[in-house]
Every structure is written in structure tokens, then in C-alpha cells.
Image (cartoon, rainbow, N blue to C red; front, side):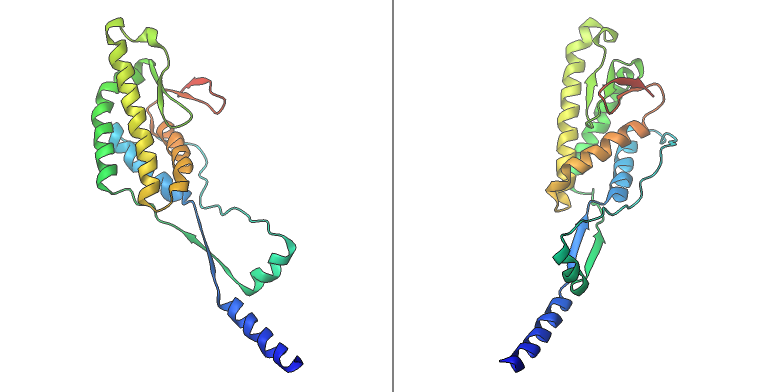
Length: 197
């Protein structure tokens, strides 16, 4: 019985060592680059200069219970940074619709009537800055824009095979819409208050 235990143990150790666990983390840097490309196309302007720190490719630390440390020694963990694909027919169509709509929305961003929300959408910030006869039209533009933005975030996540990334994509875009916006436009800070860029 003891003679079988040693070869069986060695066999299990070799099998465990041959296994590789691959963790794919949200590609933050790739998401920022993709967001910037899309947003600059939508805005149709040169990118705004930003002074915010760049987060890079931080990989979150994983805290594992004690028994897993030994297992991690036998089974190496490979970290894979995924590329982010944003070139599908659905994404191109959403982007084209947003580009066309932006021409109508731009004067309302400039006047401060419309601002960017902290969740990657837009909102009528001050309807008094919109002429009475245009208010319904502006509300419809805002609603269509928000519908397309939500569809864009979901489609990017789906197109990359990670629907669970939708919230991360939304937050990345929320930051990048503001970073790429011209000075004078309004946006919500983390607490929901309005600030002018």
C-alpha cells in the first residue's frame, strides 16, 4: 500500500503542475484607448489635453486562503490582458448615430444646458438655458443619446465575450467623455454635483 502512495502522489503533483489557471482581467488601458477613439470620432474634434494621472495596467492583488498558496505554487497563475475589440457592425452603427446627434447636442453642451453625468450618460442640467420651443426636442435628443450610449457599452462588452465588463466599460467611458470634452462643458463629479470643465 505504501509503495502505491508515493507514485500516486507524484503523479498528482505532476498533473497539478501541468495545469495553468488563466485570469483575464478587465483591460483598463485598452478600454481607455478604445473609448478615446470612439469619443473623438463622436465629438469630431481634436482631443482635449488632460493632466489626470494614467492608471496603467494594474493587476489587482488576489487574497487567497492559506491552503491555496501551496496549490498556487504547483499550479502557476497566468495573467492575460485582453485586447478590446470595438469594430463590429453594431458598434459602428451606434457610433455613427451618436456622431450625427452630436451636431445637434453640441450647442447645448456649450451653453451648459446639457451636461455629462457620472454614469457615462448626459442630462439636461439647466432647462432654462434651452428656448421653450426647443425643450421637448432636446429631451428627446438626450434620451436617444443615453439609449445609444447604454447600448454601446453593452455591445462592447458582448463583442469581447465578457458581458460582465459592461459596468467597467461604462465607468471608463464616463471618465473619458469628460477628459475629451472641450473646456467650459459641464459634468457631474463623483458625488453627483455639477462642475464646469
